[in-house]
Length: 355
Image 1: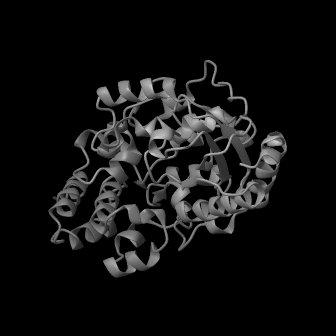
Image 2: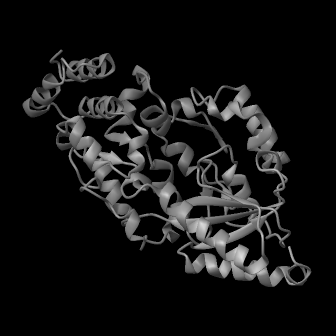
């Protein structure tokens, strides 16, 4: 970094943050790379097997909590957040209360956020390079072993709540995070302070009691894990609690008091596609694989396979009020060529006394 630029580090940091806002981020912050406290928490969490089958959480050893080992030369991390909440929260709660509707986690209704944030962060990196000269950097959007929430907290973007999501006191928690690892010295921001207090709304509302203690999530019980990361059968003990949630779960955010400050998203890329915000379970269950591929193209939902999609909807259909239309739709899938789907279809039929 040129000496003249080093002498105006505060000004460069301010310019970076301002340009981040111009690129569509709602906030940008800067932190150092010391994650020793978070590292210890991660080690303890892994030791308790709370990561389930997410073996990638262990795969990279300490590189997840040591940015300079993941990307040699890194001395600062620029964290950015972008709002995504597409509607009034009452609308999402109404979907949850209508068992015939399909609930898709609100982050997955629109375009895949990885692509949106990655593109903006690359532009931010180019801006910095034009400002200071050659820049060693790497962009991350939930795409590598990065402890993004502890980094964002250190950068002042919010605090990690009892549900383990990041909360901003002025904007709630409905936002995505992305990081830019850089090899230039910049002034760091003050870490955000915890404002959860004695509140335990997220703990009490969790359908599967996945938040086993404040700030501790057992992913193996979490509906987001069960419906997305889990590639196998959904354990019987959780199927009724899943309700109509076919991709992820937002309950801990929907009922968090801080989200009264959440802003409705203006980013058109995150607007709901193909009526996924209001679709019925029966409509989505009727899609064949070609239609599913077409309607989820460019979506985070593609993290699933088609059989996982049908598995999840079969469970949800097992939780609706019994009627002949639902039973008929399930019976059409009873001979599907996936044993995983057949198992969950049979369970759903049994819930309606139609096994």
